[in-house]
Length: 68
Length: 451
Image 1 (spheres, chains in turn purple, red):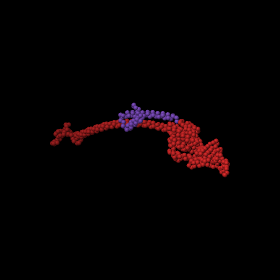
Image 2: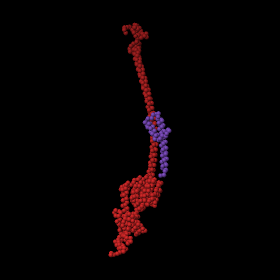
Image 3: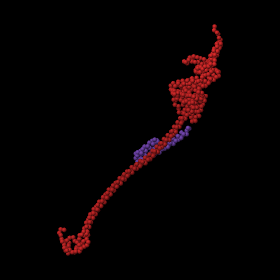
Image 4: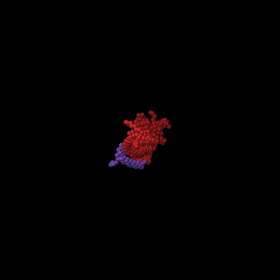
């Protein structure tokens, strides 16, 4: 991927794939490709969540250390 | 010619008359002080009474205070009322008549009534309050003032403070000390504006300092609040804070005014019209610190809230992703199952169709086979039957069976005789019967035609 996808975009795409699978509207030929893409998106989202969580934890920690 | 007297003699007569009339008599008199003069150990007053229109003088006597007790009484008066008997004041004084042949008729003041003065002051105070209530923007509801200064919203954080105080007042030091020694580490930027806080000129000076503060803000200085502080003192020293002009200025002042003028009893009028009323310099300082602390606590509370919400948000998102992952996993497996089932159904359909075909074909074949068998069986049966019939017939026709039926066989020379033509008389024939044979000779032959 050339441009880094945003969390929201990734989530939207995931939802699309999820719905498509739920509706059984994915032809078999595309199933493997779509599932692979979904796994990719999930890993991207998880990575973003993790890094945000770490950053926020750091900031909260700094806030707590400031006087009073 | 009438009797001639020397002036001093006349004065003497007058003196006697006066002494006689006023010996040991003293009077409580209401009078207005027109002039006051302090010399050595004596106070000289010019006492007058004005007409009801307020300008015309209708009575005047001079008076003095010199006796020790009297002077003490006057000092006491000042202590209690906070006012120095001076020009323009209405006082209730105890006087004795005094006549001196040089200085004429004067009054000796022995006492001055504080309560009367307090009453006057109270009256004046009430008048000031009523007057203030008539001014635009100021309302008095149930004894409580509503003023522009009170309506001002105090900043959540008070850091830049202008304070009006006397350079020598204890309150000034207390106030600064309390502010600077606060336990939260807040710092303040305090600018003093000095004024006297007692006496006749106090109210005007304080008002002037307020105006100066206002001017300074116009040229760039910024203040979050103005604090008026005065260290503890007698109730009487509050008088400047009941003054109309000062109160009016405070009521309309565009920066919130906090008062801390330290007294025991009621509020002064300035306290009543200011944004915040505290009972002393330390209290004023603590109020400011508490205000700032409350803001800080709000911020900390928000920090907690934000921390909580952010953590929740992240957790929620995490779960959402996990959920989607689960859906995808299950969904995909499901989908594959579906496809697999589809295929299987096709397969089964084909299989069962084929099987059906086979079965029906097989069945058909079997049918045919069965039919064939049946046919052949039937044919065989028929043939067999026929054969059997023939066989029966033949069996029946077997000589033995014929014999059994009672017929006899004639045999000549090992030849069966079936016709009469075959034998002649005297032939030796054998007659075979079922149970033996008879050897005989023909005795006669009879031939019949058409048999």
